[in-house]
Every structure is written in C-alpha cells, then in structure tokens.
Length: 173
Image (cartoon, rainbow, N blue to C red):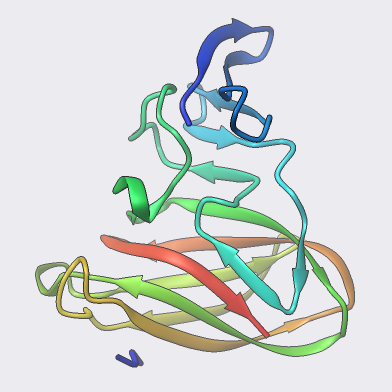
C-alpha cells in the first residue's frame, strides 16, 4: 500500500577503482564488470533505528546497466531507478531484537505498474511486499512492512523482485 563525486580512476588488482576527489570523504569504490556489482567495501554500518539513503549501500548488483565511472545511486543525480533482479546490501546494527517497521520511499510511473521488493537478512529471505504505481517518477510514496531482526550486526539485502521504480531511502524503526 502506498501513502501518499567523481574522481580519478585507475585499474587495480581487483578491477577499476575510483578515488574520490580530496574535498569529498575518501572511500574506495569498485565495479566488478564480471558480475555487474558496484562494491563499496568501506561503507559505514547503519545503526537501527535510523534512516538509510539509497546510495549508502555496501554493494549494488545492477546487471551491468551502469558503467564503472558512474557514481553510486543517488536521487539527486538521477541515478535511482531500480529494475528486476537488482539488489542492494546494507550493513545494519539492530540495537534491539524484534519486529522493526521498514518504510521505503519510492516513486513509480503509472506505465510501469509499481513493483515488488524482498528483504533478506544474512542470506535468509524474510519479507516480500508489492506496491502500486505512485503516479510518476517525481511523485513519491511510502511503502511499509514489518521485518523481524535479531539484535546485532547483520547484512540487509533489498531485492528488486519486480522493477521499474525509484528508491530514495529506507527508514527502519
């Protein structure tokens, strides 16, 4: 249900590496062209409850849609469209065990018909939700669900089961 840095690049031992300009926070990013995954090994862990911007992922599987020189997903840069079979992983630290409310801020044009997303915690599929179109690419809505999390550090994978929609971020309470 819906309620209404680019820097210099070089090729390293493990593939292309982008170094962020000095006035930006330093972080290593790597695109593995073999698997179409954009890796950010030094992405920070997100304490829950909290808000996670779409571009704050540890890895993003994009099936090779983006070139290695592209920056991470960002609504401000127009890089926020997700399609079927893509996924994002986030390192999270749940301070309390139990059900957490997850709210995703999404936009989906009517012609794309909404979408479906799944949540996987430490390789264990947990929840699948579907949502309707929001009425346009700039008409944002909120999709909510409950996700049971054990206390501690986990890998949260957001899986695009049916795509053609934009994600601005997640709020996990």
